Length: 396
Image (cartoon, rainbow, N blue to C red):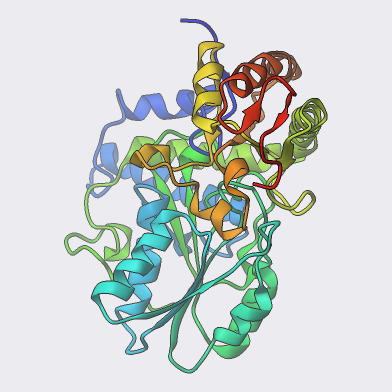
């Protein structure tokens, strides 16, 4: 198998070799149950506590007891929102139009089946959140506000500290989905003043299948599952020790490597600027400045994003499309639609997301192969006139 140029790190990241080394003993020799009273299990429990401390340090939490381990970001999001509203008689939820499906589809279900009223706050054409509209939507019946820290498709950062300060004053529970922020930019739950915050290990070089939920001391949260005592009864069942240990180590490394974000941004900007300069009919989706340093989303007008990905795949380059291709739909992503990105550009939008393991040589390779791919796709595009080398209808 040839080496792959992996530029889809917002989907999942490779497991850091140091993380794998930390994890392996718990898949081999250290398999004791952390709930047991004998040392073989009790010693494993100490490693779980160490991981809580490492996650707490990554997000600026005061106490490791505020960290609950889950299976992923989706579970953390559901645990946060459902756990809060199930203990309240209030029936209003506020979120945004560009949330991850883990939040968006949950809110739609609650709206459709359970009688909740949901306010979906819009974004502008650069993907920036209208925080004024969010504040204006808060009322006496608001049970919870759930807002992502950084958008998974565009990387745009939302003003969570401003929102947190406002909601604290109003006494409204605040959940932040920080899955795309933790490990990429500094995250501090006390500066945000949130009550709950979700993270996922495989976004910062831990294996898939482990996440965490920060629950501020004093926050009332009801469990979704019922069983044993694990995770304070909020996540009953024997702990995923290898995953938890790995996530803790990955959090430690991520915190150390935050100083590396300037290098990642330089590579991202080289890729982004190179593509925008090469292609007249391309543009950036999302705000240029207020973004996580690893993400760029570029729209290539008049061609299909999925076709770009297929040709990139032939060159062993992995990226992702803004279109909902996983569902078999030809509809553009809900994020790009919420931003008002034109049809012919939204369908040709590609997200490139980097990690600390990417190199400048890889960026140069992408920049060298993209012109041939775009030229080939334009030649067969129904929106492009190959004779004049111009769009058939430049207004669409």
